[in-house]
Image 1 (cartoon, rainbow, N blue to C red):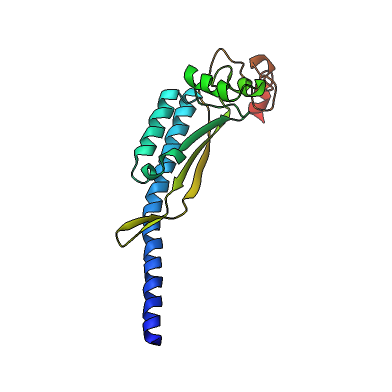
Image 2: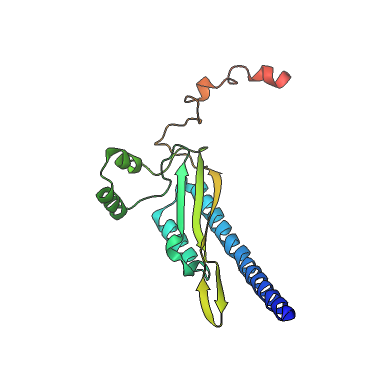
Length: 192
């Protein structure tokens, strides 16, 4: 009887180990897909200083249609914010209309007014949210356990100069050629 109990225990431990190993084998490509999408979003934002609504929809749809992401497609979300907290994603009139219907406060409306971009040299934080469906198959029936919520974040720097915005550095006043500290004294800097 003791040998039978040990055999059942060893079988259970081997089954759970196999379950965890298979889920880990699928987890790494899933997470790398999320990393690749985050990098693609950061490159688009670095080029234009914001993410257009079309690119946002394309990347989100592509992620939601990937094999493992398609199990929980509603948990996929892309967020991009400038250093001042302003969204770096272009919103359409319809999404603004829906947003205003939900939140009519002036503070919420101010967040979405104006241009979705800032001047070059400002950081933008890109975050992708998704849930990994931790699941197993028992006697041919898929059993979904608690999904694991994960995020991938990275910061990129904007590179496009807009003439309709003031050029300023983060945390310092506007600096132009005439205000540059090295403008009048550049010969002395070379000799040092």
